[in-house]
Amino acid sequence: MLGGQDGDGVALALRVIVSLARIEGAPRLVEITSAHVDSCLYHGQVSLDFAHKLVELGAKVRVPTTLNVGSMDLLHPGLIRTGTDAEREIALRGRELMSAYVDLGCTPTWTCAPYQLPNRPGLGEHVAWAESNAIVFANSVLGARTDRYGDFLDICAAITGRAPYSGLQTTEARRGTVVFDCRSLGDRFLRSDLAYPLLGHHVGSLVGSEIPVLVGIPEDVSEDRLKAFGAAAASAGGVALFHVVGVTPEAPTGSLDHLPRYDVDLETMRATRRRLSTIASGALDAVSVGTPHASYAECLQLADLLRDGPPLQVPFYLSTGRATRARAEDTGVLETLESAGVTVVVDTCTYVTSILSPAWKNVMTNSGKWAHYAPGNIGVDVVIGSLAECVASARAGKVVLDAW
Amino acid sequence: MVIHARTLNPGTASGEPIRLTAPLSFWGGTDEQGRIVDAHHPQCGTVLAGRVLVMESGRGSSSASSVLAEQIRARTGPAAIILARPDTIIALGALVAHELYGLATPVIVVDRPAYDDLPTDRLLRVEADLLDATITW
Image 1 (cartoon, helix red, strand yellow):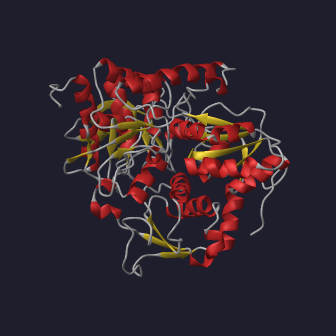
Image 2: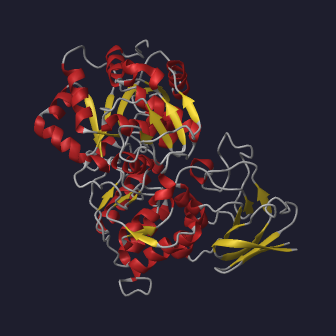
Image 3: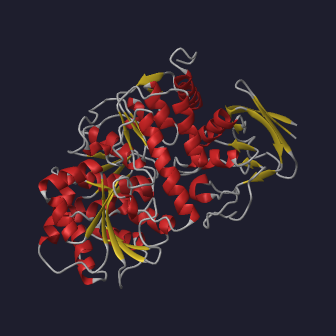
C-alpha cells in the first residue's frame, strides 16, 4: 500500500496512518471493520484541498463508512442562511466538501448518530470512528473499539482499512479509572431524561479524559439516555469511554474499592443545571432539540407531547438524521411534528451552521452538548431542560422549569 | 547550545520563541491571522504567526488539526512547534499541510527538564528529520 501498488491515494492515506502510529508508539496497525468520518464539515480551504487530493488520486474507502453532519441541510437548503459572504462561502464549499466525501465511496448518512443505523459494530470490533459523541457511544454502549480520531485521520483509516493499535483499541486502556456513585439521586430523578445530560456534563467537567464508571443507574436505561450522557461528558471533558455497572458490556463486575470515588446528589445536579445554562428565566426566542441527532423514539416522544395542547409560541427545531426523518414520514410522525410547527433539520445541526436567526438571543435545549457549544459557536444564551420543559416553554414563549 | 528532541513532523525553521503559559486549542482559540483569541487564555491577543511556538501540549477538539493546517497554508501558522508531550492532533495538522502544500512546519517534543530550560529571549533554530531533531541557539 505504501509503495503505491494500491494507488497514490491509498499510499497518502497510509503515510498519515503510519506517521500517527509512530507518534503514538503503536506496535502495529489493526484492521478495522467500519469507519465514521467527521472531516466532511467545512473548516476552511484545507478541508476541501485534502478531500479533492484524495479524489484526484483515485482513493476509495475499503470498509463501510458513514458520514457525520456537514455544513448544509441538503434536503432543505433554504434553511441555511446565505446573507453574508462568509455564510455563502460555507454553504457553497460545505456542499462541495460533502460531495467529495461521497465521491470517495462514503455512504451519505449525514448523521452524528451512526449508531442509530443498521449494521452497527459489535462488542470487541475494531473500528475507526470520529466525532466525540459517536466515539464515546461506540466504545461504551456498543463495546466496539475506537480511539479518538478526528479530521484527516478518519478518512485515511477508511481508505486503508487500518488504524494504529494504540489508545482505546487496546484492552489495557479500557478499564474504568474513577467511580461516580449515583444512588443518592433516587429513582425518580434517574428515570427523568434531564438526568443524563446533566450527569454527563458534571462527570466530563470533573474527569477530563479519564474513564468513569457509573453506579446506581437503572438497568433498563435507554440508549437515548446513554447517548445524551456520553455526548455531554465528551464535550465538557474528553470522555471517550464510560462504563455503567449492570448496563454497558464492558462494565466492571468486581469490587471498585481501589478506584477514586465521587458521590453525586441532587444539589450537585441543580448546580450543574445552573452552570450549564447562561440564563435561568425570561422570554425565549427559540427551542432546539436533537443534539446528537434525535432517534425515532425521541421523535415519537416529541410528537406525543405536541399532539394535544396549546400552539407553540416560538420557533422549534428538531435535528435528526435523514434515515430517521424518512421513517417518521412513513409513520405519520413527521406530519404530527410539522403541523405542530416543528422545523425538522437533517444532514447538519443547528449549532454548527447558520440556521437560527442572528436576532435570536435566548434559546432552550434538552442537550448538554448543544448548551456547551452553542454560546461560543453561534452567540446565543442557553437554558437546558427536559423535553417536556422545552415543549412547555415553547408554548408559553418563556422559560418554564419544573421544580425538583 | 544544542539540545536533542524527538520529531513528530520533520522540517527546518528559525524564529523568535513564544512560550505559552497555558495549553491552547487552535480550534476556537486562534484566528485566521494566527492570533490567540481565546478570551480565557492568559496570552490572548498574542500573535503566533512566524514564531517558534513553545507549549506543553494542545487542548480540545480534533478540528484543531484542520485549523493548524489552514494557518500553515495561509502562511499565518507558527514557524515551528516545540511541545513537552506528544500531541497527535497538532502533528496531524502539520503533516497534512506538508502533504498538500509541501510546507514543512517542524513539530518536535523535548522532555523535561530541557523543555523548561529553553530560552525565550533569543532566536531558536529547529532542525528535525525522522531520526533526530535539534534545537540550537
